[in-house]
Amino acid sequence: MEIRVLKYFLLVAREENITKAANLLHLTQPTLSRQLMQLEEELGVQLFRRSKHRIILTEEGMLLRRRAEEIVALADKTKDDLQHREEQLTGNVAVGSGELQSSSFLTQLLTAFQEKNPLVSFTIYSGNSDNIKERIERGLLDVGLLQEPVDISKYSFVRTPCREQWGVLVREDSELASRERVSPADLASVPLILPEREIVQNELLNWFGPYAEGLRITATGNLLYNLASLARASGGSVLTLNLDCTYEGLRFIPLSPPLESNTVLVWKKTQTFSAAAAALIEFSEKYISGMEQNLI
Image 1 (cartoon, rainbow, N blue to C red):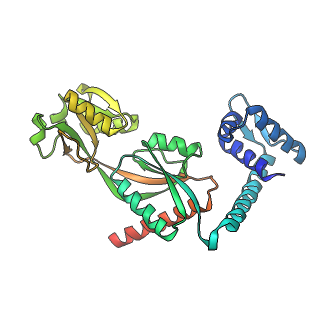
Image 2 (cartoon, rainbow, N blue to C red):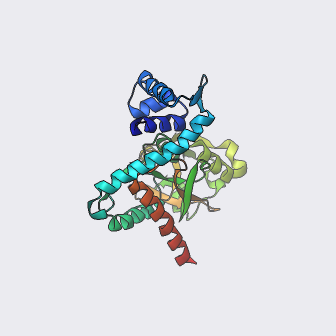
Image 3 (spheres, rainbow, N blue to C red):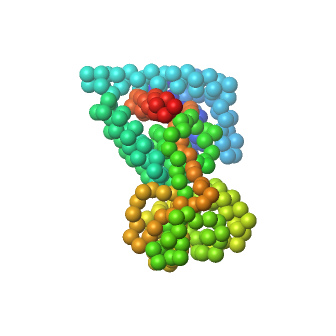
């Protein structure tokens, strides 16, 4: 059994779809299918049961998955150990983050980790929680900072100590610009621009209560810079998180009653991580635990 083929097998087992796995491996589907058939012939067992939409591991396949994870992890660790210079951790970790105040916390965490491991580098991807989850599923990101509400049932996670404050961006010539806070009644009759994530929209509509049905929603989007430009031109009001950013001609006003969101740092439960990514995850758990203890 070749390590390369075992990695192919593990990816197919994870994705439960040969076509998706082939795309991730940059192989053609027939090539990957042939490799799996040869593995089955070598072992003399059937590893998968194939259906129309997915493939399912047989009992023999589940046994091989456990053994293959151990073999591949040991092979990767051996390779990493041999390549480390003077036992220093090296590698690149792919990290995803939304437009959040918690991004400042994330940069502090990454900086603290890099001070201890100067040979580790980061690739930072910016997007909303849905984009980041998709890339984690595809194996393109190791960890992601997500804004709640979000389904994290498939992930291991640590909740950050940060809370995101919701408010509205309005033009400085708006009647609302002089307010210290705005209520659902204040926004019920003005054109609104909302985040595109449906689960977040639902949370905002719950905040509006009885005013939700009559709202004038003129646009949705995922990047605040573009939404702020639209608000400046159209006079619409953007429901958004407070990012401590300045947008010319616009003013941020908090909501009343207050509305806040939590954030979580997540990673895939069943994924085999590189040494650098695994070290970052372990460091993050200890870093956040230390912050929480200092706050008590």
